[in-house]
Image (tube, rainbow, N blue to C red; front, side, top):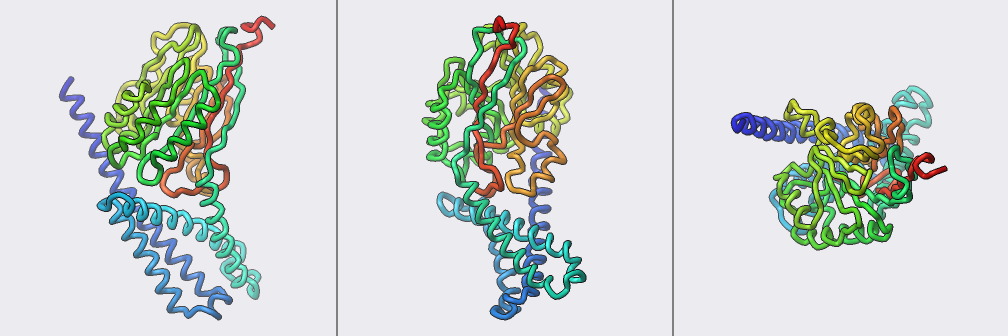
Amino acid sequence: MVFRLQATQHVIIISKQLEVVLFGTILTTITTLMHAYVFWRATTVPVLVRHVARRTMVITGIVSWLLFLGARYFERSAEGGLATALELFAMNWLASLFLIFVAVLAVDIVTAYGWLLRRHAPALRGWGLLAGVLLAGLAMVQGLRPPVVETYEVTLAGLPAEHDGLVVVGASDFHLGNLIGPDWLTARVDQILAEKPDLIVLLGDLFEGHSPPDDRLLASFQRLKAPLGVWAVQGNHDAHYRGHESADMLAAAGIEVLHNRWTEVAGGLVLAGVEDLNRHRRAAQENDPVADSLAGRPPGAVILLSHSPWKVEQAATDGVGLMLCGHTHGGQIWPFGYLVKLQNPYLSGRYKVAGMLLIVCRGTGTWGPRMRLWPPGEILRIVLRAPPSAAGH
């Protein structure tokens, strides 16, 4: 049994290392191609050609590419404010470049790279560059805005009448680390408590996971209180560094992590939570997290917490009435959401799946760039309603 556990942990470590190397290689390759494309097309825009030497544009492209690579390389070894500045520059520049690239590429596709609208194509390309810059600016504004509170009314099968009107407040994907710190968390705790929740649920990726959690975060987490408790599940980022450290901080704050188990938070209301399904898949474990989390539960209404919106159909089949998830960020930066949706069909918002209601939070914080396009981050406010039969209607 010990050997099997050690082997599983070894597989997870190797998988993480390979994933980091692969991600870094892909990111560098894509960024290089986007730099080359954007600055190459910029050299064909009439207004730029008239006012900026082609050589200057090429040098600017090379310098920005080197700055990005340098920031990505040195941010890991830097400390304090320097690490934050380097990471913020690298991530925001990457997202801005992506938006500019998409806008310019769209113009090139529409004009067939100048074969259509031959006289106007170069000028339209300039408008594409400008549109990308404006979109990047808007995304920065949206990314820095406080998350909005989205309210859902949910009729939950099996909910006793005495719990009608119970308020659940949920949040996900804080990504606390270099770019999002204690002051941000303090403001989010204020927002959550302002909703006067009966139950608070945290849906994973609370920490960025590249380093130990900042001790200054503990005081804010300790302020989270609700009559039916504060509960959490872990996400893939929570386990990046050493998963037990993030779990230890939550435990010190009085927040219980549901790892493939359930608890009856009130008579007739069961709250269950699964381990991170990304980590479970990478480790190729044989257990069934959803089944494990629901095994032996008492009768009544069931809410399932899962960081990733996966195994949704199984949850519905197994009797879950409401499933709450995060992970996707709603794509965070349009049109990147279309790619995210290939792996996560349930991207954000409310879905009805085989009689079960699924709500996917688009994230309270941001991952990577402090940018969002279009919707801002969100905090879920869910008002539970008993079925008419239970309420005596």
